[in-house]
Length: 94
Image (cartoon, rainbow, N blue to C red):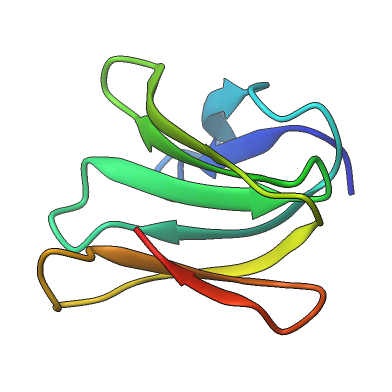
């Protein structure tokens, strides 16, 4: 594990990665595509979860925690579009 988030190009034999993002300062633990497919939600040992616009290559939202974030998940519930789980089994909605 490292601090990169790679988007793989599964349709090309020559171009293995489509994008590599280095927004995290420690190892990335989990990542999920949004339901519409334009953003990725990632989390990791840098105690953050980050919403990344893949087409633009920018972070659109950063959420900082006091401990490593282990799992992220998009939900269909509004107004909380995603959830994250940290080391102490703390579940937060954003």
